[in-house]
Image 1 (cartoon, rainbow, N blue to C red):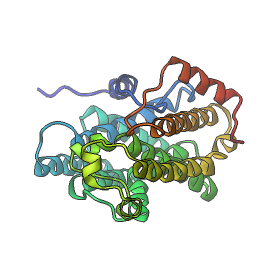
Image 2 (image 1 turned 180 degrees about the horizontal axis):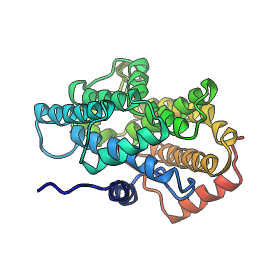
Image 3 (image 1 turned 135 degrees about the vertical axis):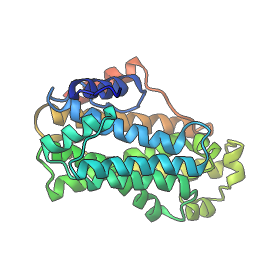
Length: 288
């Protein structure tokens, strides 16, 4: 007999996932108003699981695509008002109907994770940003919809922040992504600076690599600063959550810049002192 998943238990499983999975940026943190944390956790759980379908384990590409198609079907069930029983979709359905969230951003996320399986190289920065428009920007847009602040200007700021965060992840996971057969760096800029795939395969540091990475890190820092005013536009605890996210992103950029002076980049970890500084930055925000 199938166990019926309650809305409360479904939300709790999403909150538990958000709390247990390490991220360099706050996810459904207690900076948010209490009413926002469950739906934000539901959005995160949907994206986290779907991302894992594309990335984790020893599945072949067809198996990964089948799992993503199943998620599309379950979104379709929500769209049709049909019953769902997977905890992620029970929570997601409640969040979508309670807060009148659009479904298109969720489909865009699935499009990005499908692209992870089917596209392994990116010709230029425009292709990278197009990927970000599906993989990251929908999350920021959904948060603005939750808060009823999805104005044109706010969405533009949010897109800049979200795309920057996505590219930061690419820059800190270069070796990890390569092991999965993917390179999210613009191929034309690699060629311009004399960086090769063989160099990435060997994690080999060189002056050419340092200059290439300087360009990538400067671009992403500019993107983050472009979106930073959103944290002062959004009031109250939501604004503080955005501040913490931006401070976390800028902290990772600084760590990557420091690494880039002497060695091939690897994922930097944020330590207690970093989080103290991030918290201080939410109170005395330097990017107004």
